[in-house]
Amino acid sequence: MAAHGGGAPPYDGAVTELPETVRLDGGELLMGAEGGRPDERPVHRVAIAPLLVAVTPVTNARYAPFVADGGAPPRFRDDERFNAPECPVVGVSWHEAAAYCQWLADATGVPWRLPDEAEREYAALGGLVGSDWPWLGGDWRGHPAAGVIAAADRPHRPLTECANGYGLRCMAENVHEWCRDWYHADAYARAGAGGCEPAARARRVSRGGSWRHAVKFTRVTARASLAPERRYNDFGFRLYASA
Image 1 (cartoon, rainbow, N blue to C red):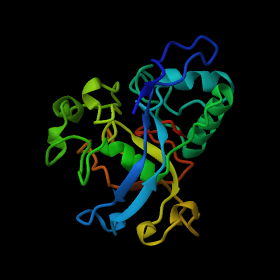
Image 2: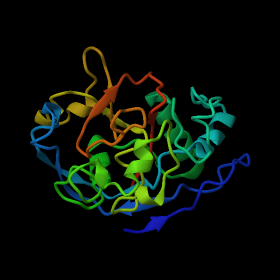
Image 3: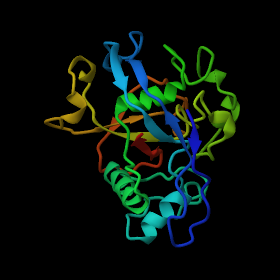
């Protein structure tokens, strides 16, 4: 596993740097949790290919060049609670997140994309096996910055204390992150279901915690979903690429 890239400079009219990433070698994931909600069962084995994962969700600073180049502005960009340059961009629909990935891929030559649900779960575990959280401990209180994050009323700057075993920050807290799979409650019992659009009430999968929730931390295996056109103030995304 090796780190790449750099930080997020202020927008200067061009895409000058790749996002900071971690390379994961891949392996086998026991996906799901028998003690979780019904849509997290059955636990099943998934092969994960090597991939690059951005250390943080896409920030407002990194989203700004896309907007300057004609991309859709985030819904809450004029609200001071949601527009801090170093904080995750929110108010971005699934379609807009996917468009950003393609825009950055075209600009950098790296095939950025949203993750498969299994890739997101594998990355979130940070090398732990059978854990509910990306950190040691039985519940969300094991997070090194649990008290600070629990009191938050907006997205926070990804902190070093938020890093999991792979160095990825905010994998179970801060903002929900879009995945590219369609949501099916019985997806784990039907191989390939995530690539099939539901017949009605189509939703895309999201993973991770949310600053808006009463409990702002979410188990690694927990699944959520939202209609892909929705633009909520606790929904962002993270860059992935096959390595």
